[in-house]
Length: 335
Image 1 (spheres, rainbow, N blue to C red):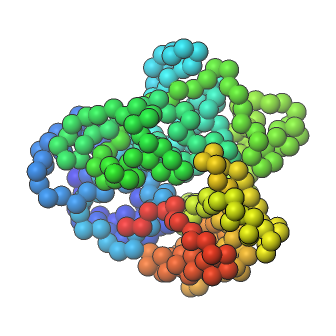
Image 2 (cartoon, rainbow, N blue to C red; image 1 turned 180 degrees about the vertical axis):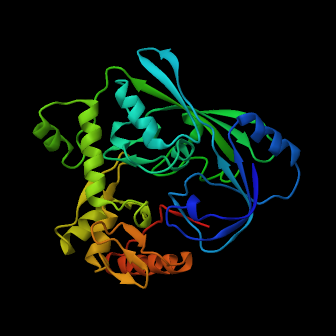
């Protein structure tokens, strides 16, 4: 289905009423293939957009929005002692997580209640509570926006990193993901080392996939605003990864600085804490604000523009750099 001059308000979680020249929505992979082959060689400005839970539009989009609506969750079969589960790019992410937990398949439970669609998860390499989606992805099926050819990317070919992948770097804007295959365990080893997960599990008295999901959902709801109630894109900034020597220097000035080890060998800092120390938590400028419970989140109280939210993010970044000498990197994509 092709739409013209369409509002993108319901396609971005900030609730910004920007418009796009065109929007092409695809329920079937073959229809998307036909569309891109038909327009092969044309000078098209495409942007793939699911629920827009990680996007900040600062103006109208002059081009064609590509919106995946491919549905379906399928048990593809066993591989070694694991189960391969595939999901269409248009499946709501938490619907997939709920389905896998209900079927006793471990791997995604720590990623409960993250907003957005399945197709966006490999792009961003979403993560929460000590788990990244890359740890479960078997392969990714995608269509070239340039000529409509189909390609399947192995986990290694996706080149996953902290909140990034090949789809955000050298292949940015070049592929439409249509399906993602996950390798999940029937005998999961639960990841409970992050924050208070283990403590909360002990309170419930039973270590299970369902209880991990319950705790993660409860924790997220207590700290993060619901995009259906107040416009936001979750964590606006990445947690910076820095050297051990820099951490040691910072600790002399800021002894309470929260620090976590990172698999890269560096040290990860809590961006929300850095922002809070600069006095931004709960601060509001017009309808653009820093959330009062989690300083990592920027919110739109109703009528903030994308430019106003972007300007607020710049002021936050400048403050953190002036105080700590650290440049925060946006997790949200600015368009």
